[in-house]
Length: 355
Ligand code: SAH
Ligand code: SF4
Image (cartoon, rainbow, N blue to C red; front, side):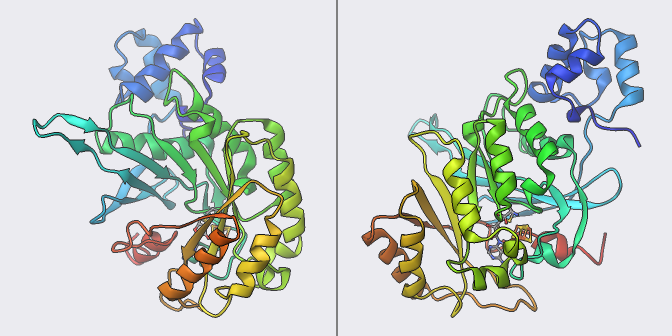
């Protein structure tokens, strides 16, 4: 099977093609002109175009399914070259605003939620992705392709800066080498030009890999999927917590290089009668007391056969109030695309019978 040219950083590409400046041109054709084939790359010599065509795939993904939500969220199910499928989501964070004369007064803001693996090894008991087990890591190019394919499909202009969250299928830090490469490719100024500050890696807490990512100094944000304040419950929800307990994660976060103006995001999945009590809120305040943190509360999103229940709005607000009155920044995640298939892994699950 041919690899995708999207797997290469610009540096790597400039070692593969001669003269090296062709790499910049090829990057431009791919990421800002949205070329459909190597043959479209008009200022590239024909022999080089043919050579590239023989060796590489330009776009490794095809769209299998697309679901549009009322709030503008679009969930994509993509097919990979080996026939495996995975998903990504385009989130409309702020719609475009028009003035009386129809002129755009405020631009739309987009975030793309990308997958890093087909399936996941971590096996969280609340997560639909975990149910399907682990199939394989995505290559760097397959990660990058999700954003490129979504920009092309929605006619989003190349210059439009997007944000990226690594919160789709898979555990990003379990595929660290390809993740790091994808981060670099996204950052490339001649390409998608999405800086580290616009990229957030969400992890279930592989503490040793949090350190490794920090040492790479890529300038990205991290979000920690904490979900519980004591190791007993956390190990029930996220089995690998036994190897990477809460304390080891907190210590790794303290070592992580963060922009002094920024905060580390802690995701807290709220599950009815499991972790939605104010005693847990109190412990959370204590746990995060010497970290510049912000907390994002997430409603557990039930799926067929899921072992847990969605918390009440009342308990969610009480939890948030407690954190805020005790000095923690706290938001409740707006479940975008709730009318389609919101939680990660759900679109893929729905299509199982067909693909
Ligand atoms: N593996 C990484 C990133 C992908 S999971 C991680 O765990 O952080 C992305 C997010 O989806 C996580 O914050 C996870 O808690 C959330 N999620 C998984 N299943 C969910 C469900 N049933 N309801 C709501 N959120 C869920
Ligand atoms: Fe994997 Fe994240 Fe799902 Fe846990 S929540 S199984 S780490 S994708």
